[in-house]
Image (tube, rainbow, N blue to C red; front, side, top):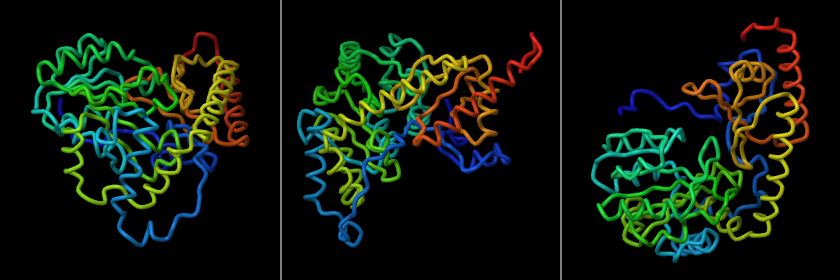
Length: 348
């Protein structure tokens, strides 16, 4: 599977949105990502985080807090990186090139990263098929439909792969708002498992570029050696240390996101758009008129995530303000009225 010819389309590109909808109402309401619109509170950074190279002790402090927050066995099982994206091809290169299977449909960068690492890549829809892989990749909860694979099933798969020298990669980018009892973070030291955790999505600070890989101590050492010193920037260290330790904020935010996602479900439901899944950071929509809905909202400056290979589905993130909620409601009302005005039997 050769994926290097072109860039993968992602949400969050306002440049692409402007090209797609040149006459849209501005500013765009960007609902095309799964990033929390209510970020961790900004604070004044110590000037030294910008002036000086990051101190090793500060990095160890971040790892210790991440270990506790994510439930990893020990700090030896955690490595920090400038975002999880940079980890993907490095993790895929931990084993010799072989057969990589990605449980899909899902985040496209996993397949691309495995391809870069030299694997023969295929996407499969049946979890049981992953047993035939050398490298198996599962996003849990899944992006974009929110599917969750139970911990026991993942551990059984990992045991089978480990027995033949294979590797299971579990991307838990959205586990902060998922069923944490199904996280493999606490099992990272068993061998043959790499768990990825993203900081930017739940904390709403994607631009900081901070992520983590959890695995057995030898695998963590190998990954850490690839990065060398100062891999995580000073500002990311400061925000990571404070935010990951702020359990009260995290618990309150989970409640707020649950309320907001329920409100979003009700809003889409009122206009006849079925919500088929998702997490509390994004909703997965299925509609025969998905293309029409995407275009109508885009013209109104409301950007959803569409998928070229799945034209009947969309993903919608959460509005970040009451004004954005009102703009979304108004745009949905216009779209719904246009549909009602269409002659019966016509197709959009």
